[in-house]
Image (cartoon, rainbow, N blue to C red; front, side):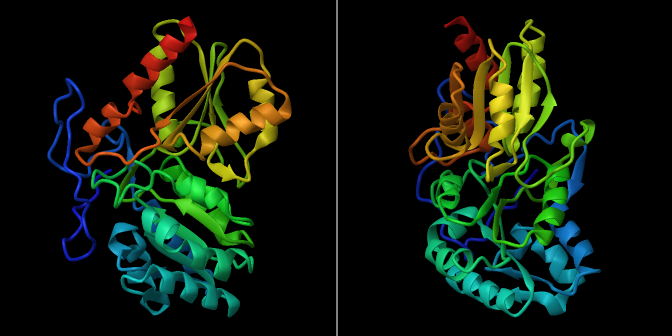
Length: 349
């Protein structure tokens, strides 16, 4: 999935300089690069096209953006339904307040921006105007985690931690185009506020090969295994599935439990799977190891009385470098090869 460069007059770019990982060749000079789409089927703009289709039959659906409709795929909706699209400019607080007002008037607003701007800049407005009032605003945000090389100004590495701490807010991290399509339909029917991470552009179709159906609040076992249980969300489910194939070639049997809902967490399914003795439990997420899926799973296991060897794969608790995504993903250990290598090391401990 390729993300076009951000226009210089649109957003301030990070001042952090790109760095290479040790012994790692700079794969490309682009700050945004493909996310697992090579060799896979892709679906164009799954969020924007699905929302536009839904709006054909639902007059209550409206779309809002803070100067980023092209970069959240909301421009597809805007072209199909121009009378129901609102461009709020570079004003995320106004975006969320306007969405709240529309929800009070009976509409179902989809408000889009970058994840960093929703989580950091508009947090109080989401909390007071939307979440406290339990309004059906759907906050759908692009560039989650380490999906841009533009550095800390654009990398939403802590958005899940921020949003899952907000009372009454459903938090989603879909894996691929299929997940995004199904989740968009589900949240349109959900009565409360939702924060959903977005993958945009040409999004890989991964879950189409599995008997999968998205449900809010449900984790789904994509494949079973006897040695390792991966619990993952977002693009890391793509990576854990590929890592499981690589590990299988070395005789390691891996289960993959996809958890697209970060809040409310599917504790029952996680506990059921983790209670199957003898498996290494690995939480994998495109997010800081602080406050996201990994810590939520760890707390779930502890509170549920399930004892298992538990490890996390995620981003470090620090401001990340700028650079080319393939280089950064290798540097921070979230590539398929890095996942497989970590699991092999942990199994020997």
